[in-house]
Length: 474
Image 1: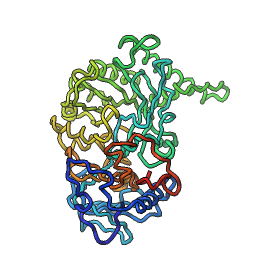
Image 2: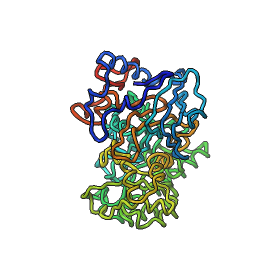
Image 3: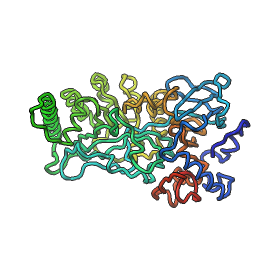
Image 4: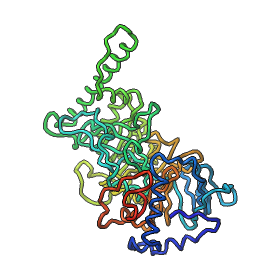
């Protein structure tokens, strides 16, 4: 429940349950069922798509330790949100709080930018099928179900933006889509947009063992590279035909090809390649193709990137790393190392971390940063890899990734150090709207699990959620 008052309530009154023990969902709030329903309706109306944030009162988050990411921590800070963006921040006493602001007590808490996951499969964004290994025309956008509980799990983990990706069973698995995790009825309401208004995303590609198989899929790494090379050459020729047709009014129009259109966007730099790759030789194969065709790429997973950091740095590619601490998996990830983020950072390679949810659960995303620090990555670099580093790799760093005046008010409130296993996400905010509240039993279900945690989310209506009496805003 949002707290607004000139009189601030102590944080300890809200966060009484001892750390390390999951409280019962119903034990967290003293409010009765009727009041919960009213709260849910009000919060749902505030978060409903199409709401005019510009008419809302400013919000002042007071007393938290601010972690801007692009600057030093601010103890006992104040952050002002207005019209969905960060309007001001700084130490208490140095930030003017608007007279009409809703004042939110954050004493004892940590406030940081919303987390950015560069590689996720929440919402089931599946793309290509078994008909062939090269399918750039398919779009994750057309597959995502915004009612899936997985999106609520992501909000419960503090995620506010993510790259929803098709799988890695194809050399080209389809177009990814960048999502902002608002409460919404349709995927279109979650999409970031290119300047032309189309849904923003990259192109998912993969090499190594995942896309290998019986023909028409490649059976060797060499054949995989040859198929990709031939497809990009075809896209270059398609681009040239379209250019000539546009310059000659008498020319026959070039028939549209959705797959080649997507590859032309890659060749022209609008859409970057998000490339699944593990072994060092596979990483170098990606860099070879990127150099040949001039496309931008983010290398994903990169189990053996620690073997070739200089080559990655020289290429200009960025790395999105997954960290897992359990045995098993695939043979090509045998040499996966928790040292990878440290080695890449020391070499100067742009770095982010990702969940690959369900490989690691979105609710444990902060833990990836803790594992990287345990292996030697500087703390500041780990926090950046969970936020601003990912934003840069999605071309979104002008909007998200740090607590910077003018950026979107995508925020996470925590009850402790972000890299502590005992810390919990208390609230998640997107564009100044709360999308997760641990005080809501309905929201807490997705943070903690239990009966109903995997059920689809009720739809959002103009006046709040259906079944509002069941708990928090949907």
